Length: 337
Image 1: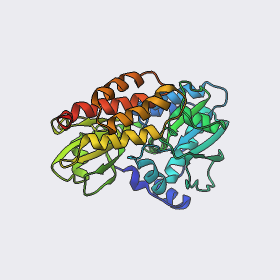
Image 2 (image 1 turned 60 degrees about the vertical axis):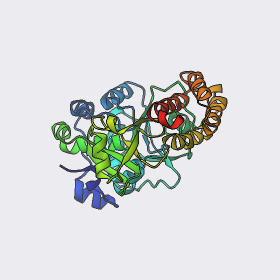
Image 3 (image 1 turned 90 degrees about the vertical axis):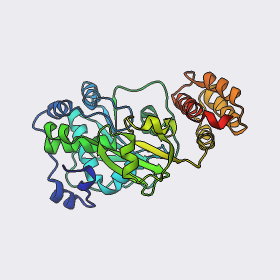
């Protein structure tokens, strides 16, 4: 197996020596077919078949292709690690995706400090657009808005002429182009960030759909583990009896048995409320009210507010917050007594 992070190279020459030259496809459509055969799904969280997004963009008139490195999730650092270790593999995938869909422009959208290495082999010049340091800045419609020169706020609308791909997805495209779909199906993996009550927090490359317990073992969780927040700040709390067989996600936060799950969740909700996109009532008023009710331990009010904000926002930020709170109330019911 050739793990993704083993392709690390600082310079283009070192990258080519280690991984070979950029494998341009022989004809249009070849790469999209290979990605379809490989079964690659997006690594930005949606898990959508990558070839479908490529094929949809390919039939539009000279689309814009965007590498999304905006990691607004505070508990995730995989994209930052990937770009710092393997920037050229990401750029290979970006160039290949641009060629596959006949792109007119190519962007790398990332936080302040993101470095786009200069390369000799690129057919498409890459423009860096700085992503704001906000929780929702990496949502695909927010990325599209930012590249178009508007504020990076998520909406319920997307543009068919813009292709947004997570940087890990692009690195996987470069692997498929080099080693083929069959190789990828045998070695499909993804990057997961593990933190919290663990001795070795960090980013781990693991086989696709690992159990949560596997992630905790890799990071050497401090036992006993009270619960694990899977999926980040818009995720779900799992207690030990749920951890055994539950498939993992790209983010896992371990909670020690001496910690309060409701206190931890309240801290997260206060942060999420501060990240309001201020486009609708549920986000502007509902989330701050929810954070206040949780701080005051007013559980009937918490439940009422969760129902009021869920499914009524201009984007999915209130929905994700509601999901987190519901899971906390279910997992840590004994703390409310």
